[in-house]
Length: 629
Ligand SMILES: Cc1ncc(C[n+]2csc(CCOP(=O)(O)OP(=O)(O)O)c2C)c(N)n1
Image: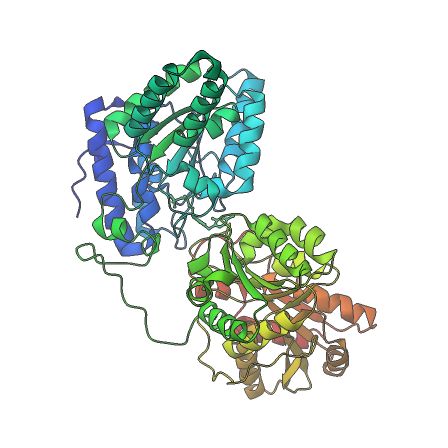
C-alpha cells in the first residue's frame, strides 16, 4: 500500500490550501503513487492522469476552487482532481456499478463544474462560466485544462476565437501539452507547438537576431522589423494565441511544482488586474513518474489491471477476435483489391483497429486529429473524386459530426462508408460514451442505409456491402469480442435491405438487429421447450427494412418483439412499428431497447441484463406479448 500521510489530511481543496507551499510537491507525489496503486487494480486512464498530477495540484492550491471553476477537457486526466475533492474511496469501484465515473460528472461532485467524456468542450464551457460570472457580477475565474490532443478539435478554436473577441478577462486556459493524443498527436498545430527548440535556446536565438538586426543599415529597417517578427513566429508558439487576443505564458515545465506554483500565482495576479484571457502552455509527459507508462504512453492511455512492479497487464484471454479486429482485417483485405479505398480516423487509430491498416497502407490512411466533423467532410470530398472513403468513428463520436453527415454526405448522396465501432453498451466509460443514438440519427436521413451484423462473420460481408453501395452507408458493431463463429473465406455483399429468417414459428415473431440476434435465438429455444413457437428474423438492415419478409411474418405470428441495443425512441423498433402501421398490421408489439434515460457506467453484461437485452429479457417479453393477445 502506498504511503499517504498528507492525502489522509485532505478531504477537499480547502485542506490542500492549508498546507504550506513546500508540502504541495509531496501531495503530488502521494497522488501519483495512489493513482498507480488504484488503477493497477481497477484499470482506467493511467498515462493521462499521471501527466496532469502537478498541474491539477498546483491549480487547486493557487486558485480558490470551487469558486474558481476548473473545467477539464475530456476529463480522463482528472484522477488527481477526484482524489483532492473527496473521492479517494470511490476509486475502489471506478467505472463499475455504484462506483465513481472514469470522467468528471456534475452529479458526482460540486467540484466537477462541467461533465465531459468527449474532447474539445472545455474552453467553450469555461468561457460560458466566466461570462456568467461577469453577468452576475461575481468574483472568480474559469479555468479550462485542455490537452494538445483536445486542442485539435475545431470547437476549441471556435471557443478561443470567441473568448479573444470578448477579451474575457476572467478566463484562463491551461494547455497540457504532452505531444500525445491517445496516439502521437497529429497536425500542423502539434508541430507548431512542439518544443524542438527549448525556450532558453529560442531566447538566445532571438537575442542574437536582435543584435544582428540592429547592426543593419537604416534603409533595411523595414525588412529588419519584418524579419524580427518572422523569427518570433518561428520560435514562439505563443504568437498563435496572442493573435487570438490571449496573453501567452510559457512554455513552462509542467512537472516542476515550484515553477507551476509561481506561474499560476503570477497568472492569478494578472487575471485579478483584468489581464485575461490568458493561456498557460505547460509542457508535460504522459505517464510521468511511472516508468512503464512514461515509456509506452499509448499502451498505458487506458489500461486493464496490471502489476505495479513490472507494469505488466494481464494477458488477453484467448478467444474470438473483437469486432474491431474483424473490421480492420476485412478492410485491409478489401483495400488490397480496391485502390480507391481510403481509411479515416479521428484520433482513434488504435481504438478502431486502423493502426493495422496504416501499417499496410500508410498512404491511404488519415488520422485527422480529434476532428470528427472534418473527418466526415474530408471523406465527402474524397468521394466526390471517386475514392471510396471509410470513416471509422465510434457511434458516440459521430454524434459530433451530425450536420456533416446530413449536409455534406447525405444531401449530396456521396459514397462514404461509416464504420461505427462501440455501437451499443460500452460499459465502464459510461453515459457519455454509450452508442445508443446512431440508428435514430442516421435512419432519418435520405440516401443513407444502416446495418448491424448479428456476428463477426456477417460484419465482414456488411463492410463489403457498405463499400460497394454507391451512396452513404453505415455499419454499426459493438465493443465486444465476436461469438467465435466460422468466418466465410469469401467476402460477399449482402443484397441491400435483405433480412434473414433464422428460425420459423407461429406464436410470435422476434425481429432483432445486431448481436442481440444470438440472445433472440437462445430465447426462442427456451420458449420452444415451453410450447411457444417463435420465429426469429435477423433484420440486418435498420434501413431499408425488409418489409417483404417482415409484414407477412408479423401478420401470421400475430405478436412481435423487436430487439436492439439502442435507444427505443427513434431506433430500429420504431422503424418496424412505422412499417407495420403503414401496412395496416395491428398486432401486439413490444420494443426491447434502451429506455429514455441515461445508462451510467457498469459491466456490459449487467447493464444488458437490467435492460432486458438478454435471452431472459427477450423470453419474458415474448411471453408477455403472446399472453396479451
Ligand atoms: C470527440 C472525441 N473524439 C475522440 C475522443 C477519444 N479520446 C479520448 S482522450 C483522447 C486524447 C486526448 O488527448 P489530449 O487532449 O492531448 O490529452 P492527453 O491524454 O494527452 O493528456 C481521445 C482522442 C474523445 N474523447 N472525444
